[in-house]
Picture 1 (tube, one colour):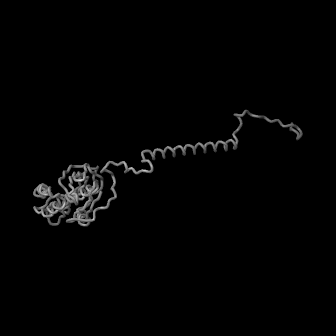
Picture 2 (spheres, rainbow, N blue to C red):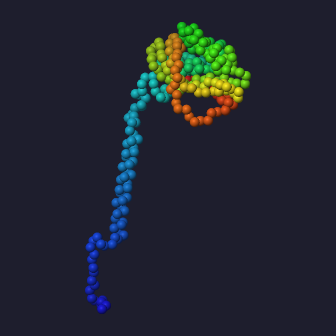
Picture 3 (cartoon, rainbow, N blue to C red):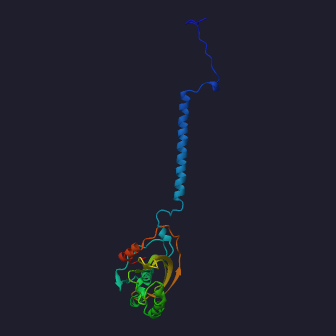
Length: 265
């Protein structure tokens, strides 16, 4: 029988877990999820910043303030000397850094192609050597760069390359380290890379690179640092890269067009 308008309606209430979800319930759960996501992101950012800052020197002081004397991965900022003698830098400061700068420049001179020619070799030795050690150094270097050594690189007795070829010998300082210093004497190690060989189409001695360390003994003469002795040892050499070797023409052009540098610590 249909109910009349004035008859009461009967309502049935289901248990709470059986009631269907309403849009209001879904809307209440979304802010909670968003808040949890924000908290996770903030936590990850705090952890990342803490890891990035770990190991950094404290603010207000430079890491170089605690560097070992005579060492350091970067340059000191001192300017190269402004004077030369026979094309070699001279007039180095009477300081540890002055001795390191002298050692770097003398390494370049010792490793140059001019050392393979008798006249230019003697000029270099007279320029960089302490007067008391010049005779012994000249005798030693005459044996080291003349005769068999020159022939091994394809040079004649005068240190000249065969016609059509360019002899390349360059020493490039990578860094210096003072191992002993006082007002009168200094010992400096110079880590170097070098280029040596004959550049040209018919060369049987192509230009190659090598790594070595020169240990130079210097004496203060009253006006400059001068060389008294030096030794050389191999390395340390980095892992060779996979860079493609240049052509003989490119090496010849680079050797003839690119000049060298004066070095300062």
